[in-house]
Image (cartoon, rainbow, N blue to C red; front, top):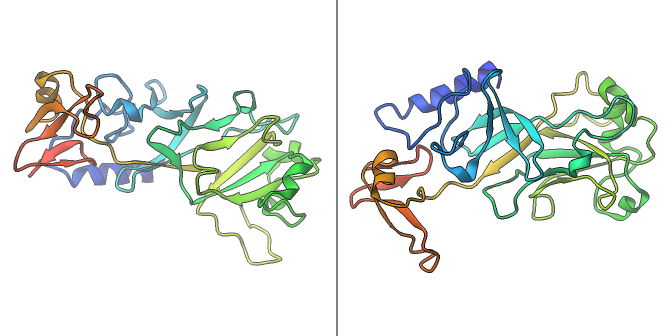
Amino acid sequence: MDSVSTFFVLLLLSLFAGKSTGKQCQACGSTVVPYPMSTATDCGDPNYSIFCNSSSGQLYFSSINGFRYPISKINPAFQKLVVRPPPVSSTSCYATDYAQGGIKLNSSGPFNLSGDNTIMYFNCAPRLLTTPLDCSNTSLCWSYVRQVPEFQSCRSMNICCTFRAGGSATASGVRLSNASQCTAYQSFVSLSPPSSGQQWPQWPQGGMELQWSLPRELQCRNQSDCDGAIPNSNCSADPLAPASGIRRCFCNSGFRWDPITGTCIN
């Protein structure tokens, strides 16, 4: 995580001075881990699990296929984080997560791709020419591979495509396989292409923005779970799933659940 992102998170958390944060995880090196992100079973919300490399202080987001993507930014105020897409092979136009099928998100989990991603597919099959993706000879992906040395292995391809993420078709990840007909990809957050006929003076760093749904109250087994994590709450049956046996730390009368800090506030 860069210094600007770290400063922003520290500033955000300082706004809640005087409030405890429900089971917030310890920092990963010098990198703040905001609620509800969870790097261990005893902190954060387990539904928002990420991985901490304590030696490097680097946080990673794990796809459901087990591939880990470095996290470059976390914005808890807007429930968004940015991961770095994997590099492409220097000898062939294949992403290093091709064997895992690209980045895949749990469709029933709290994370999905935001609509601010511009995604480029490389080394695609002709069948994609019939899709709504921009696979034309003037597609932005061609400018990228011609200008960026790291993607020179994709310059001999016949087809690449560019599209803006968003909607159910792309919400749960970027798929690479024989079925998807592409072998590599790149992504940019809030990309603003230059005027027609102009080239990029310098391409921005690749990034893929994920957004998460606000967490519900923590699940609990008994009252001691709530007392240790969320003061002013009571371990009670979940009224939204009465037959499931799930219990949560619901705030006492006079308090309300704050999903940003993971606490009951008045």
